[in-house]
Image (cartoon, rainbow, N blue to C red; front, side):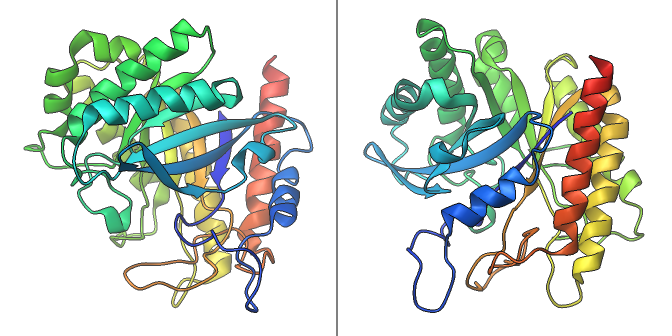
Length: 322
């Protein structure tokens, strides 16, 4: 399994250093990433940009993502759709332009962010007008542009878990996209955060991971998405803060990553990407901000060393199997 990370909270890190706060330090970010790669194994850096309509991209996080792709690191680039007008033709032009401009640097492109989640405050594109059409047309355009340029880029989309049997997101998406959409997909991402937005009744993360990933695979299978199409854990994390000690974050991280590794063959999971490298430099209302393996001042929490060790174990496992 290939591991990776998102570097920070979107929208919180765009100012230069100053004002007594460390908002973003490229050198310390790069040093932290280097700490995951002593074996030069593949490691994913997850970057985001938000489409605001009229050809505009903003909220690019991290701001210097292209400078971080070195030493075996892979770039997975997420295009979130937060357009207020639902102009799908313009969105498609932006998808194509992205591949034209940075395609040779890309390992994967994710079309939309949590399009089944209607709450933009928690990272969802689902309330954007015409978002389902944007997913389908964006995936098709990305595939066409990649093939025309003979690039090696995986194309995916992602979603959050749903345990509602009446949820129509996946059936409606596949009805709209059909076989052409399915053929254009290389993976589907899953964002999930056990024991964060809803507390676990028991601290059994293995059971929780199996239930969530198994349900997600079942939802895909029910609409004809085959088990041969990989799942990527595109976001997973456990924030620190009041009642959430840093030592517990390290324990939760290890339990979840090991559970996913144990289940990877059963559910065809190929990637795991942690959310996030570093805490937001400023607190915000409406949800946790201390998601990082590093604090806002770049000092490590215990989970930083835990993840370094898990990445190293994964690299050793790949080397042994080759």
